[in-house]
Amino acid sequence: MRDGKVLYSDVYRPDAEGKFPILLIRTPYDKDNVSTGIGYQVHPVHAAQRGYVVLMQDVRGMFTSEGTFEALSQEINDGYDTVRWAASLPYSSGKVGMFGGSYTGVTQILAAMSKPPELLAITPRHTAANYYRGWTYQDGALLLGFDILWTITLCMGELASAKLPPEEKARQKRVLALASDRFREVSSRLPLEKTNVFEALSRAPYFRSWLDHPSYDQYWARTDATKHFAEMSVPGLHFAGWYDIFLRGTLENYTGMLRSGKPQKLVIGPWVHGTDFGSRIGEWDSGYESQGSVLGVEAMQLRWFDRWLKGIDNGIEKEPAVLLYVMGENRWREEKEWPLARTAYTKYYLQSAGHANSLVGDGTLVTEPPKTEQRDVFVYDPMNPVPTTGGATTGTYPAALNDGVFNQESIERRYDVLVYTTPVLEKGTEVTGPVKLTLFASSSQVDTDFTGKLVDVRPDGYARILCDGIVRARYRYSFEKPKLLNLGAVFEYTIDLTATSMLFERGHRIRLEVSSSNFPKYDRNLNTGADYSRDPEARTALQTIYHGPEHLSCLTLPIIPR
Image (cartoon, rainbow, N blue to C red; front, side, top):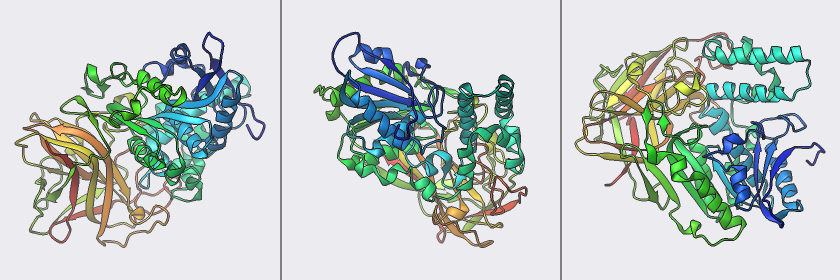
């Protein structure tokens, strides 16, 4: 690297003479673990047999590589230097592509942002674009479950090569394992910085930096790819999942990099984060055809590299730009763009007689604006938050039990959850695209959160989570300049529920849940306006949701005509 540190790579080469294109993966998860490539990335042996040299590199400070690991920011310069080095190898054709998912998608996006001239193709999977709004925080709320458990995983990896006495290394591993095993219990204590999570993460000073920068500032701007899309002129094949915590980031990468003028393709399946694109999504099996191995994810990536690194005119850039999986109908469909040009954005207005609390309340969703003004009230207690149950929840513990489709009935029986439901659908209704929630609300405290969740309700009552979102009230105007609330004042909030593709079948109902917590996917707002990690106090908040002709609270759904 430019500062003299050495990063180590395993090299897989074709059994032949000549010069070959390079495929590079830069990983914090151990370059020796090639099994992570089977089925959903690009396996180095398969690629070498296809005529590529594959470099699997440990990023700075992890496993065999020198230096200190500093999440995110180090990957801009190191990515640039590594691509240029790879292109100069004696067996290299001078053309480089990158592959991988999650953090190995981060290393692609940030390398593309640094613009090494030899980087000619990328295939990022399940990754982010703005690492404030789409990795560490989401619309002002800390992605607590992911942040802590992912950082614990990285600390474990860093310990593997740490030069420590064996007894000290064993002690630190025990602390990390305990923090992971008791994550829910520990993360519920106040203040967070006094728990053993902070002792466990002492090897990760970047985690403390994340908490020290709760607003969008220069710390986050330096790695924000969304500000550089027009310059990132690299053909990209982007993979996303409807139940992936980084779905928004992948959509931003795809739509944003189109501005560079280079071809981009997008594949969205019914997948969760960090899997091999399998069909099991929580309590739902999406079926044989949805699996990445059946779809041919690895072959798709190799075709992409063949086109841009070998110059093979295989026509892949002429094929439909978007391939998405429509849940409910359970089939793949090709599209020309994202969002779909034929979308009919339709508002479903919140309505009740003032008692939308819980599943037995009177909340409804209607397509005509309500004619009378009404309000619903609930109490949000940070010490008894609504528990995370399914959805795009990578990082909540135990992660394997929470990702994807789960029944929301137990959540909807709580009186701090407002439930609004349409009448039974007389015909199938397809929702494919971005989902937004507009709320007019007030709070009895100076800061708080509001959450929304889109749900499909079967005739038997099973309530399937589709997507969710949150807004921290102090960031209602700006993520750079937080502003506390005036007690009892009504403000308009826009909650981004990201996106989905679902055919609500005839006989089903569309449901919206509104509350103020989804823990531990997001940290709890303690309602005091103070720093969450240092605040020992939590206050109860009286929350009021307004709906009627003067306050048009509504759920905006992307309806696709059929």
